[in-house]
Length: 251
Image (cartoon, rainbow, N blue to C red; front, top):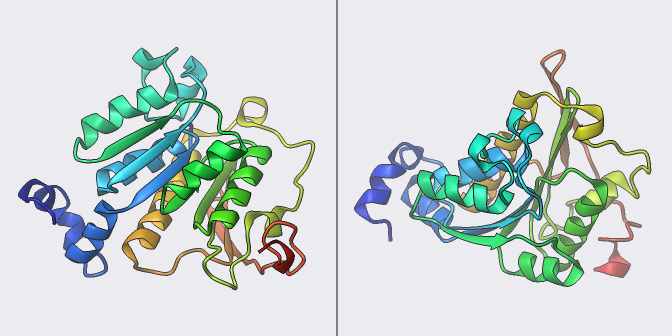
């Protein structure tokens, strides 16, 4: 049940007929894994904590650097040199002491990633490299857990939801295949701060929709964001029947 403090804290959310008391209870009982506490993971973690997601698993092996502060709004100047997980826990606890926070400070290998995914209801990929995204996707497919995936670089962002519980849903590999060897990171190509905030906020919104059970998630759709022209575009994405990750031979 929700106590009096929780009813007051989440009152503006509970007023929405799409969420109400039942939806808020579902959020309280939910567990999520956030992979990466950088530009995308920062707004994701802040909004999910504020919304009352009951248990949040935070995964990042990196420490806070001065160059992170231009966009990674969960960290501050006093956090420089600190573990990103510890910095995030400090901020999230201050925002909402009602939630449970589980730390994953070491890099997740295949086994530990599989265990982390198995222990939650939903995963948010907020990483910044293709190999991590592929590993997270494979673990979510194997564990039948929905994955909210976001990315941003320069002045372009994208977002989609992959839900292996739905037979029609593609997975990350269906869309991107084996990626590109020439993939750039934000440290090489640059990125504007509000863009990662926008993509991360949308990831948090998609997660709330899936967890509380309202709205239409971005399953089978890829949202493309052009920050330079302030334009949004949506593409339909179909499941690849021959996908080496989620295809019938690998189900």
